[in-house]
Length: 329
Image (cartoon, rainbow, N blue to C red; front, top):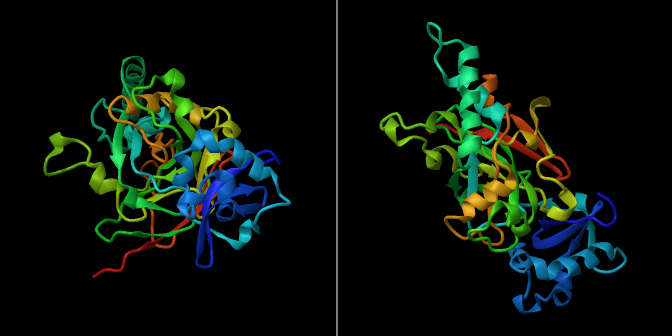
């Protein structure tokens, strides 16, 4: 991060929690800049959503404050705890959006018999993905804000399953209401980007009692803490092309996911535009863009008590999530 760049965070030092600007290795406590950013009538910006609600208006002031290292209240980043950088009203999630990921899952979940070889399954999945790209739409479902947790939080794996998985994703954070926008203008409504790990309970994805209903994303993705988020929101202008970022997750030091966002079937702009056709996307909302190849289901290695996931996306910082097994009752 160079001197002109900054990111938005939600952090705490002791019992004091605040919205802040991260610049280099320091974070500026914005509670001391309420007059400058026009939030003095709010008493204290206890959430970054206060800022995202007025993103376009406040960004020039935030640029100035981030560069004013000799004024304001600055703390070393190692002295604060980072929390989820935003509390979203709505969470939109894109499924089956990385070509290689979908092909790998098709191979992992298909029973082979007769002339149904791995090569045939892979070929059929590739044909399906090509057809989706040509004439289809992003597959979008909703997540619960209650699943959001911080970038260093310990997450409890529910005891009702032993098949919990990781899904590292690039998340777009909305900065201006988007309703029925097109892909050409969709990114103008994005304030910035952050890291999301969309944890999934694999054996709850499909309903065995009513398979015709398809996927059950409510049960499989929304346990408490199943959406580690952050550590920061990096403004879109500092991220560059969101289709040229590297998404990397390690499990106990071993690389499991390491793919480019260039492998997305539908771009970030296309996903934002598609979601906005049904309902307004509001400031602070999250748009998750799918997970690349390398999930546990493909590796045959799902999460276990004590595992540590380290996650990075180019320019967005680092997330560290340890999981523990829920005590049996």
